Image 1 (cartoon, helix red, strand yellow):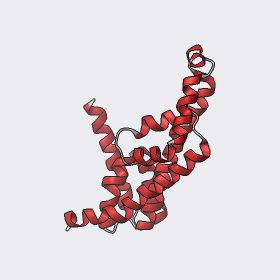
Image 2 (cartoon, rainbow, N blue to C red):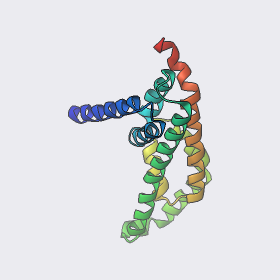
Image 3 (cartoon, one colour):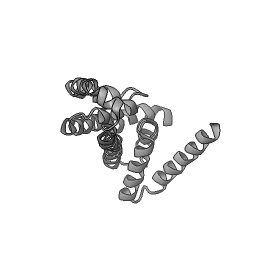
Image 4 (cartoon, rainbow, N blue to C red):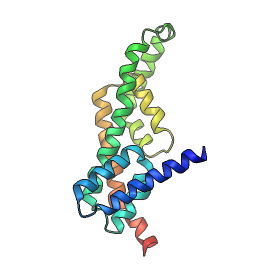
Length: 172
């Protein structure tokens, strides 16, 4: 297990180094940041991007766009496959027997989707199960996309414009 953690840490170090060394090429740096954000969302958003902005290695514009798109695409790719898989799961007898429960939970999720998307965005550990559940319960795609985009935008704005001021004293 420690080897798995060590290998993912070295992969993250590689992404950080690629982001650092491409500061002369904002488009490439943005792609690297978006891909790293897609795979390591919370780590990159909350602990990697703000110091890079504070050090002047990553511009705020590039960071805002790349963190937004990395997180947003990650949300969609957690939701959509599960939603489409439920078409096939609907053939299973257990799912058919509990269809009413699935529909009731889906309606509940739809009613509280806005609050849920903002809560899970800032609460570690519950984002993945909640997004998978949204797909499984066939939450309204338009509302899911809207609230996901708004919560991703809020997270990116906080990461880009608020968090670097937290890291500035530590870097001085």
